[in-house]
Image (tube, rainbow, N blue to C red; front, side, top):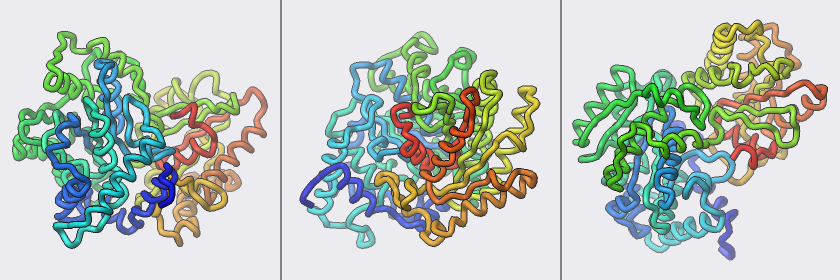
Length: 503
């Protein structure tokens, strides 16, 4: 290649994306595509010049779970940075919202475009220059997520981080992050029951996967879980010879803190982050605290930011418009989203009673859209009663928009947001979006058909919102909920010009 820019790196990375069928098989397997998943990752690691033991220098806090793992990772990162301001703290998460480099952060900020390009092509070239493979089935280059994981390892080692918070991509046992021989601490967030029916796996199977990040002589943490899942996590901790197994519950003091991330469900994630941080600091930095919630921890919890999760963003172009962003994509997470949204602190504030509300929604991955929409509407009804609102759940939204995750009206994606996860024929026919619109009409037969929009792009959806703003008088507020997909949220942030406010 004649140039080695960030754009070149993203284009090269996109060439490694798996197609829709492969991704669906990966989701259904819980991350185990084959018995070679970890051996292949170790092979790639060796080909770029590292041993598994080298990864121990990253001083890893390894986090997995069905829901809340990203938020827990963000809380942990924020706590460590406030407690040890002289440290260099690495954070690896997925997916990204707007730019792929968001996945690799140093002290809370994504690495720069130049840094990403540098580390990306160093990994790329090492794989090109060392093609010796132990397993004939191993491709010359790994798929998208594995490659980014290698880039993250290389970047963190090159930058000599003092601590790394490492979020699992899918599952745990066979995830590409699970090649660190001895993390300092491991933690499993909530196991979502709805994943059992959606993915056709038992809770024991899900817990077995997640518990695979537990390691010999390493403390193992989790939160309250359904009995079947908890039993399996205990068994995994014993089997893998963890040094301890502890179930974390929120304390009364923690409940009183106004966390940087909205939503009552975040208290549990914050509690796990506090426990893992305390143990990490004791083991790695010989730092102990008499106070159950030291002031740096409290400050870290208050100042945690994690875009796209129960996030309210005032529109920088329209003072009367507020965007509510939440990447909820399961039954449980949508319930949590509605608890946050339909409350006096959010959509039911006294100064927003004359609001026009819109929903922008999409879902992928074979999930049943009608079930998700039904859960959403039922929870809205519950919340309106809880808060003694006279509003009707059927009329909570004035406009609903079902669009694809395609960024622009031209049918193209922003390069960082390009996806091969949806079959092209399905995308072109707007099959998912039409199914969602049909489900909405079935759930709410009296909802005006003219207020239901099926659109081919995020840009088309944002255009409807801008037209809605023009129709409202100066006193009327516009509230827009975007949910169902983090990829959708990333597209809205990009197209609506919310990056400075949201990220």
